[in-house]
Length: 254
Figure (cartoon, rainbow, N blue to C red):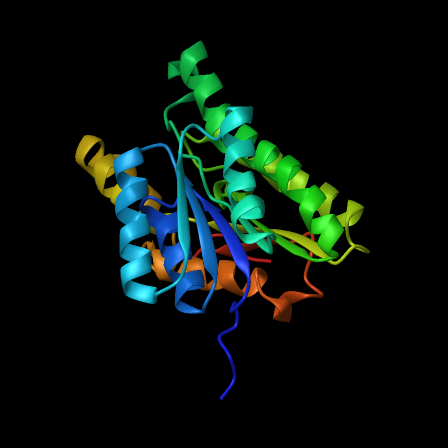
């Protein structure tokens, strides 16, 4: 019987208190990984840690705070290296869009959108890569957005941040391609998450329009996204790097 795919590995998942990040944490835990999870809300982090330990019997450390702040990102990555002695996979999922027409943004919402979706990724990569280089192994999987490719309405500021993430993916992939480190982005379209439910309560018409764009006529599931993240985080994906892979029901093709 083969051992679990991520047994003995350490995975950091940001934004793992709920939604896609939580589904990713569950997927890695179900395949034997020990985890460090980060999120803004201490209560959500604590609940997720308890649930993952109870359900999967792995070791899990939680760090609460704003990952767009350099010190929080540093503490999150150090939680992996100082407690487990290594870091195999980084999943940059922390983010969240403030979706509105571009001129309806304020300076504060524009900055928040960039900070949440791009600086979180930049800082976590910056602190993770020295350990991965020393190991001669690492997987970085960023959660981008299919809207960068299809120019979805009300997404201009969000796409500026996620597009920056997509660009950093290709740059880092080339820079570290010969050091055993791969860097890829998973770009979902609309996904059925608690966050989507909240948007639907505020603006059901926006959610209806976004779902109409999907040829399959439905949102993706969190588990469908997590399965691609897990593949790219695995040793099996050793020859895949610098890619933006859409999980999108056909919203963009090619």
